[in-house]
Amino acid sequence: GGLARAAAGRVELLDLLRARLPEELQACLVGCNLRDDGTLVLTAASPAWAARLRFEGPALLECCRERFPAAARVRVRSATP
Image 1 (tube, rainbow, N blue to C red):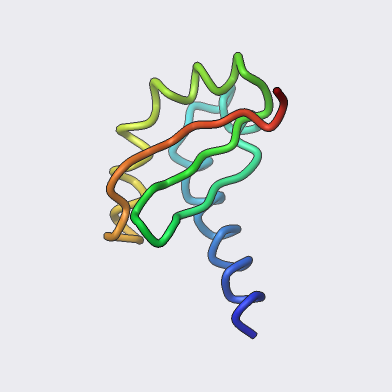
Image 2 (cartoon, rainbow, N blue to C red):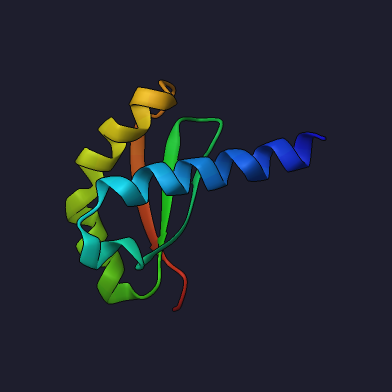
């Protein structure tokens, strides 16, 4: 039960954040998570897309806070090294 709720929450958050991004960046956001310490972790498809997503970080954090008020900071990482 708890694992399924957590996964559903991440999917909901991912959909919420993708909707806020410009169309050309939506597919580059491949995952996200809101940690217990308030860190919003965004996972980009590549290092280049991660750099682009960093510029969107403040807007995405604000968007996240509308639904998840505990969000305090953003960390962007790449799915590939």
